[in-house]
Length: 262
Image 1 (tube, one colour):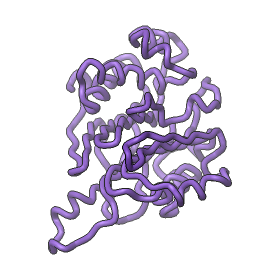
Image 2 (cartoon, helix red, strand yellow; image 1 turned 180 degrees about the vertical axis):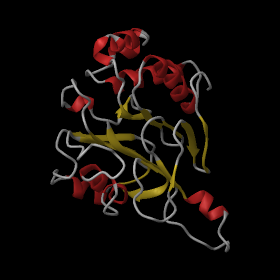
Image 3 (cartoon, one colour; image 1 turned 180 degrees about the horizontal axis):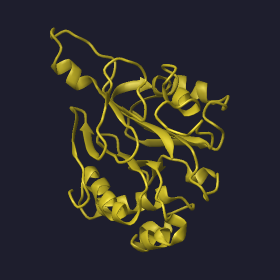
């Protein structure tokens, strides 16, 4: 499990997602409000972003996100219009190692799981990994359930699915076999998709806010933001459980997500 955020819109500093408010990613990772029974998320973090040339960059560490002295400088000097970041709470039985930290990437897509595949160590992990194509399986670095789900998503993308359809397919595959939570984010530099399945996810869509503004000259600071917990009390909406989210430069939409429905 973890806390994660995603952003798509005009370039902003990483600092806005990490330190911009007391309940931005760093704050909510250290003192979560929507993570019942959990005190913090101390097992490292990761950030993935696309630069102006749409080249993907990633920074990961096993240091707790609030304890890394080098992070504020990176966050204040790096800007991007497409970002996925996560702070990790390692699932029971999984090692604390950098290969387990989201976001995961193949160089084009970024992926994060806020959740757990229960039954992973009792055979479900082997079953799911056996469904991954040999090429994708060979690229798996570590032992986490997240990496295997990402490999399945990449196989679905290779087969022609969009990002939303790929995530819905994972839920349809895993949910009947596991009682785990499956809040996922899948994004590239232009599109993102997310699922709400067992954990909280909030959205702030400034495109929608602008559409409903009273004055045409109204300005907004951000584009589309998803986060496990809201950063402040302005413009955030908690998404219903069992929801599929799709987003791009024009904003986002969401529909109910049920097993077997893609």
